[in-house]
Length: 179
Ligand code: NI
Image (cartoon, rainbow, N blue to C red; front, side, top):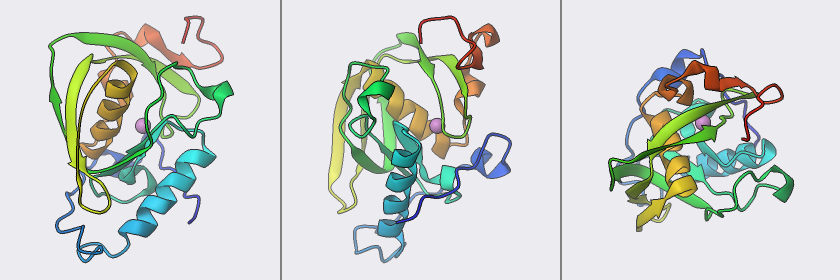
């Protein structure tokens, strides 16, 4: 396990769509380094106190994300809601409402900044864990937001691209809004 360098906004690799993993449950036959990749993603996310990370952020353009608020030290937790630590491979999101809600987001690839981003309030997401077991969950609010943010990375989208009003985008220590 290694703490990896997180690519930052401006790096062209973050704009590339990532590729789905095939047959990954066959002990990583398609991608033998899957376990190592996920271990590195965990190390990197935890070291940065992030709530999630996507493989392209450490330079691997595969459809793998991890997220969860359990590992974030309490002092950094902005949200009451606890999101279980989850590895999600080949994720698919289905919005269950047209309702978008605004919430503040940050990103390890956009250090120091936060922005107000509209996301679907309620979604169903599915995908696979590392053993090939299907994961399917209906979630709302912060949990739904985290998943939408991470899956966006797999499509080459960073949260600033989704901000509707750039007045609500700025350096964390300067923003006067309740984050
Ligand atoms: Ni991010």
